[in-house]
Structure formats: structure tokens, C-alpha cells
Image (cartoon, rainbow over all chains, first blue to last red; front, top):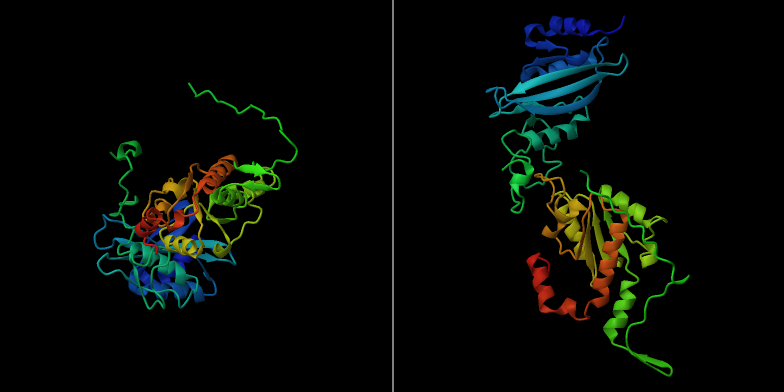
Length: 168
Length: 194
């Protein structure tokens, strides 16, 4: 019997009850969220279970929602079941003022650099990460660029004519 | 109304089978030729420039095309491209330089021996190009002094060759004492290079 989204949803609700919520299927990929305290429990469950077998971490990123006060930063995990070719998305929301999320490096070694990138661009502090420092930006940078309040453009240019670029 | 396109259809006939560099002006006699040293040195240097291709992105591909046989850069004396700054004269920075890469470019420039020239190929090396962001260095002239800028995104191989020819002009006409002069020292000071 193929692993369907309904079966995954059923197994998750049986195990975690009402802690997992927000089930949606954009473009056929099951998406759900859980509080950040149990993110490792959910990841471990999805990894160890012999029916679910989500053993490949495809992507780990963050999204900044400036309007949702209290849950501004979302850490998004994309997992993949290689045996049955099923993908799933798991979101964990956290507050901007205290962006601590448990690290997934114990489970997936690939999460190491992806969490460093997420820290570099969004400021999410991964608790227990072996080497959490900036990976793609300059080490002396003191802000987190992908947050929505910071502009894309380099602020030190003086010769760019804003009118021509639609920003005047 | 689109701009009328102009094609370069002036075919230049081949003057001779083997082209040699022109002799510098001087006094010729029976068995001797007298000219000034910087003309001879300039002639020798400009026709044997060894470039260091610091190819980062798309402009690097255009450089690869320039070094290929169709647009041959080797006929200008750049037969041997070295990837070691200790052995090269011309640092060709081709491609987008991120802010994290800036100190690396500076380090490579510092390792080059005098006389050295720098050519910024492509829009990204000249001024940041279309990448006006927090992570891209807006022009390598923020870290190293540049002699020739080749605009384009990417510049055609003919444009890169034109840049090399202008470098050749600069090399041929450079005075021998330029690198020890006050102006050059002030230029390097402004970049923080001793």
C-alpha cells in the first residue's frame, strides 16, 4: 500500500495529538507545523518509523513573517522518503526576540551547514549546534540580511541614481 | 522603432603573413641601433604580458572563449597564462566579487611583483554590475587599483581583446620610474597597500 498524505497525517495525529496542526497540501506536498519544543521529537519519529522512513533532509530554511507578532520566524524542514518517493514539509515557528530552535545536526549531518546559513541570514539560534557562525556573509556583519526590514541594496553606494531604478 | 544595427563589415586585408612588432624610433647605424631604454623595455613588456585570470563567474567563460583559437589571446603574447600571482604581470579580474572575496583579491594583488597591472573585466568587477546587494563588492576598485575597465555583461571576446590592447598601450608607454614615484605611492597608500 503506498504511503499517502492521509496515512502520514493519521500517524502524526495518533502520535502527537493536537501538537501537530496546520495540515495543508499545497501542490500535493503535505505541510504541517508543530511547536518548536518538540521539533526533534517529530523529526526523530519521522526518521525512525519503519512505515514513514523520512530519512533524507532536502532543505532547511527560514521564513520571516513580520506581521505575525510572536511567531515571526518559521524554520522550514523539507524531508524526503527515498524508498516511497514522498516529500513532506514541516514548519516550526519561533519568536523574533528569542529565536532558539533545537538543532537537527544530531539526526542529519546535512543540517549542519544549512543551519549555519539560516543563522547567518535570519538570526535563528540553533541550540546545540557544534559550530554556529556565519557561513556565506562576511564574519563582521552585525545584522541578519534576509529579514524583511533590511533592504537588498548596498547602502554605501553614492553614485546610483534612484530614479532610474524605480526607487526615487 | 528599433535602433538600426551597424555591422563591422570593413574587412582589413592581411598586410603580411607574419606580423612583427614595429621597431621603436631611434638612431640606426652600421651594426648598432640607439634608442631610449624605456621604449625598448616597454616594447618587450607589452608584447609578452602574462595574465592571471581571476575568473569568478560568467566573464570567466568569455575569457575561456578569448583564450580559445577563434579569438586567440595568445597572439598578443599571453600564451602562458599563469595562475600564480608571483609569476604574472596582469591580474584580470573577471566576474562578480563578493564582499567576502574582497580580501582574497587584495591578497593576490599584493603577492604580485612590480610592475603589475589590473584589468577589471565585466560589469560586476567594474562596479558591481546588476548585483546591487549587501553581499557583492561594488567594483573591485574598492580594494585594488585598476588600470583598465572592460564593460559588458559579459563583454564579447573582442572587447576583452580591446582591453588587453589598451593595457599594452599603457605598458608600452609607461615610464621606467613610475613605480617609484610619489603619485604611485600615494595611490597605493589610498588603498592601504605599503
